[in-house]
Each structure stands twice: as structure tokens, then as C-alpha cells.
Image (tube, rainbow, N blue to C red; front, top):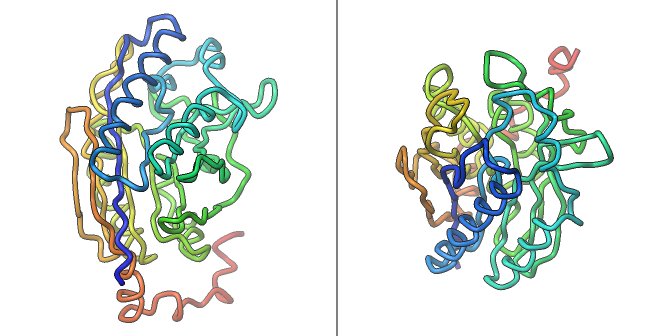
Length: 288
């Protein structure tokens, strides 16, 4: 019997101005996402991923200590606990990107993975941290991830996570494939302009090179007062052949849904023997 998994992605605009009180922003964004998760459940979604640091704005547009106050412990923080209840209620695996406080003064850009029974399965911490052109001051907020590239065994497939800027680095995408990922989610916050042309180039390429499904998520809208650009949505699923299966709009809050036939992974690997034909004994220079 075919292994068909219904995947879902949520893209959403900011629910309160970024200069509002922090708790107001966080509460409004959580309420918005709870409603969108309900919508995903009504569509039969079994595995769902939210956008990067889903409960706030992309605050890396500025360097302000106040945003440290939005970080939470994982899994003991209130948002992870809430999402465990929601996952259990809907029988849905949920990937929950959160600003994580590991210890006082140490923060990570993290995604918690929760099973359909509400069990906390573990987390991935964003590995590659940008600090480049204006508006992406992430090193002020995040320490580079130190958990490697875990893959989480769920009822609905083996799940890997890569976060936003990570997508520009093929090494981690390959590691997730070698670690057995069948679906890799990349929750992002990316704006029109410099890298938009890469949005539908790099991630389908990862899907092809590593022969798994990819779910790419991007928020939508302009976030004031910074307005570093348009978060252009267009979240999508692609299959191991790099074909786009479902795509969101550019500027609307939306649940993107696609049926993922996990048996296609074996079918594609039977044709393209990329993992068989690798020569890791010759790749040592790549990590010097």
C-alpha cells in the first residue's frame, strides 16, 4: 500500500505591529496560528510546519536586547507545551520554530518537533547564522546550532529540519539525506530582492540531490517599522524529482497542503543511485 502523507505549511503575516508590546505581538501571532492549525486539521494535514520564529516578527532587522525577552525554553516553555496539546488534539506532527533560550544569555534559532501523540521528539538548532547586508543581524540574537542534523522518526515519515539561511549550504541538506530524512522542512523569513531567484532553485535542487521531499515556508507581508522588504510567501512542497507539488500565494495568510507519496523516494533512488555512487573517501578537502 502506498505511503501517502498529507503535509501542510503555514505562511502568515504579522498579526500586530512590531512596535507593539512584546506580549501583545506574541499572543496575537499564537492566536492566529492556532486558527490556521485548526484549518490545516480540517484539511486532513498529518505533518505541519510553521514559519521561522512563528510567534513574532523577523526582529533581526534591528539589534535590540528587548527581543531576548521573547525567547523560551524548549521543551519546558509555554509555547512548546501548547503545541504539544494541539498536536495531540489533532493527531498531527507539528514542527514549531521558536526563539530558544538554552541558558541565561544563550539563545538559538530552533525548531521543536512534536509527534501526533503530543510527545516532544527533539529539536534542531539553525546551523548557519547570517550577519550580512542591512536587516539580517542574526549573530546578535543566535548562537550557531550545535545539535548536528537530527532526523525524527514519526508515524508519518522521517522528518528533518533546516532553517532559512541553512538552505544556501548543501552540506547539511546532504547530511539530512544520509541520516534518513524523507521530508525536510525549511521554515524561513526571506524578503524579495537579493536571494528571491534562489527560492525555487536551491531547495528543489536539495530535493533532487538527496532524493527526498522538501517543504519550504516563508512568511508574508511588510513588517514595520523596519520594512526591510516584502516577505513574499510562495511557500511550497516539492518532490524528489524537484517538481513543485503545491505553492502558496505571494501575499496571503495560507495553509499549503500536498499529498506526499513517500514510496517515490525508493522509486527515484532506484533510478538515480546518487548515494551509492558517492565517494566520501575523496571529500576530505571539503572540510579543511
